[in-house]
Length: 265
Length: 328
Figure (cartoon, chains in turn yellow, red):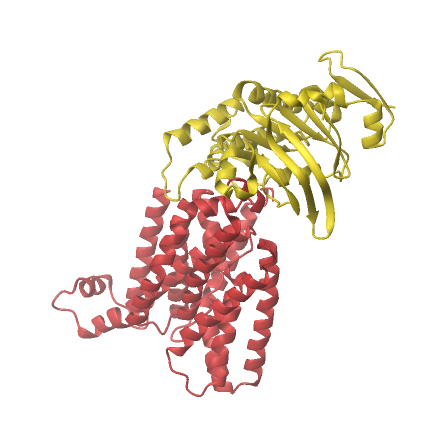
């Protein structure tokens, strides 16, 4: 790790994590730090273990060895409910039951905060209203999900995870299948969540330049191990791209944001 | 929601009244009313017909319909498959195999043994399906596949027994298999009611869990639901409810599949609303099926299970047809 990270405290940290599906090792001896209140992007070629790592950090898969720490405490010792109160997860291609409205969906996000027979509280309502407002879905709250466009639907799902009110959001390829306008919108939303709402966001992103432009911390993955991690300007270089993606490229300065921009040759 | 509940409740009461009035000896509405309120000038024959013959039967139909609909709603949510009904848990085939074995292999089995065997067969099969599909957790698809596999094994056993059994016994077994409420009496009704009341209430109280588990294991888990535990509990509830219904009335098909679909079309996707509406739909369906079965080719009585299939199938097809433009 570069010296840059030393003053940032790690919200989530994986220590010596190995992950396997049956006998097949996907990730070996991974040490991954997610800085608090930053937008971290996991980037790498297909099969580099990005989604698997995200699922493991979300507590949906148990690592075959090693541990994951949330604020210094192993997530294996946190209950499912406690974990859900603190970490929101949006996986790829979520499917909602037919006929569900945006509001119905967002209200599901309150599940970990409610006791078995607990009534719907004002805090629940406030959390849902805020989630709808942040994602710009307030006016669409009573629309059935299946009549929305892809971008709106994705925002509805993000609203659902926001209603959970966790400090951490883990998003698996949130911009895939969205058109450019919706991608930009979503990235802006993440920026707002991190900057103004003190969230720690980790997203698996397919688009290296998108990651470089919006993320504050990039983790380049290759074959289940970290090839490089740090600020985009420190991490993204011709050598790193060649190493991770096997693609020759030049890296220039993004004329708008000043972040690195990779152009394949 | 309230509107539908009231409408369906009125419809159910109407069906129950019709079932009490109609039959080999039809009572006029006035006779029925006087019998029900117990006025002085009621003939004792009418009282026997209404209270001893028809009332237990119609009440049993109501309970069985409510039970099948609840079990169907649970299965649909937990298995996340629009075609999943309690049968995929092996409940029906297990009960069938056990009852046919008792009827064919035992000489003069005691009357109470049949429902007991049916319930035990259903429970044993559901337990076997659940345990065999357990591999550091369960999965809906694994349960469905193993349920279908074990189900056909049990059906093979049933077929074997009926192919080589004594013909009279086999016919009795077949009548049981067809599903009917004809041998109802008030003690059976009371027993089933007491048996069902707690599991049905629990199912309704768990509607929030059903709402969430539909989203898929990972999504539900990420919202803090202990998915494996909930699925296990729901399967236990489903077995208690559906196993008892099957033990009481044999195999009455389609109700567990149709009632929850109709209910969710009427009142939307929340289980707190689906469950009571599905219960009413299921009860109406079985009462109607029994009534039609009694009247249509009287004096021969068609078992309710055959009628639910006859009216259920086209009804279901029309549902599918109406939503043919809805995606996946």
